[in-house]
Amino acid sequence: MRGWQRCPFDASRAMEAQLSLAKRVSSTPPDKVTSVCGMDVSYMGDRGSGAAVVMTYPNLEVVEVRGVEGTVRVPYMPTLLAFREMPLLAALRAKLRTSPSVYILNGHGVFHPRRLGSAAHFGVVFDVPTIGVASTPLWFEGVQMTGCRFTVGGRDVAAVVPSHLGGKVYVSAGHKMTLNLAEEIVRGCIRGHRLPEPLFLADSYSRRALGGSL
DNA sequence: GCGACAG
DNA sequence: ATCTTGTCGC
Image (tube, rainbow, N blue to C red; front, side, top):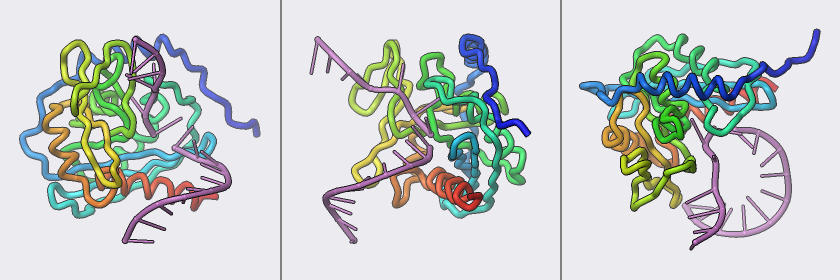
């Protein structure tokens, strides 16, 4: 059998798709948040392993854990991360038996040059509330950092949330979310790790599954 | 003022 | 993201 090959990828067409999807991003948040789902994908070459961890909110008790694996043919390209991760994220969501109030994804929400980071992208595609949490900012034309907020063209797009180990995470609203609520939820999900607990667990599980498939 | 582009 | 060595802190 032939080896895995990369999928032809048209970056400019992908960016046009982002501009189109960005128009559908809503900032109306859910009335009640009773559960959150952390999702993350780990890689080993072109093998991808994803995990989803649903927890009650604000008590953070685990209610569901799912994992998926697959071949990833789309390379990583800054600002186009969603296209690389979407297949596994979609498979993860399809496996969930519960319906979390909010999804927390590793990456950015509207803190993105076309206002459609992976978290916002996932949210629009499935029309669910999402929050983006990243370890580093995305620097592009117009980005300014003032205090604990990042702004683009005078509007707030992300918040810096201090965490453990002197670390911090960059939080932005995805779909059906406001920056303030996103920040509140992320703060409420931080326990003893730098990443909010649902993401920390999803990251751990996805990485463990990857190692176990060796 | 320069540089910093998610995973 | 992942890989790698060295260092720090519980």
